[in-house]
Amino acid sequence: MPVEDIFPYLPQDVVDYLLDQKNQERLLNEGKKKLKEAMLKIEDQLKLLDGRQDDQICTISWGNIYQKSTVNNVRHALVGRLSKSMDAYLKSNRKLLRLHRQMYKDTAIVFHKWGNTAGVPRLGDEEV
Image (cartoon, rainbow, N blue to C red):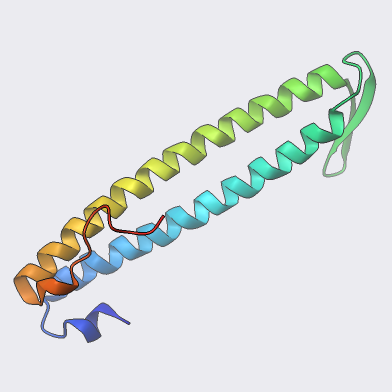
């Protein structure tokens, strides 16, 4: 249900702010989803290297470019990419948590100032 329908008498700048928060939440969730998919793909690629000797030669490709390398070099490169992806995922998750806290506070203020406080979500009562 749109914010405008819930509180038709809210000032436009408040509505814009709340909508901006929802857009930020959507973008962060999309980014987290893409990072999670990338990490799963890297983990699948690492599983392909399990049980192979480190000095064994393998061919890797990226688009139309093929290159020979050792299993050890490929494994180290994949672990590095996985580490960077995990770091970005955690940063995105922290931003999302901060945004959720701010959204709860802002929603409480909006309900307190312009509406019924019985519908205010309480921080910590949300489902995980």
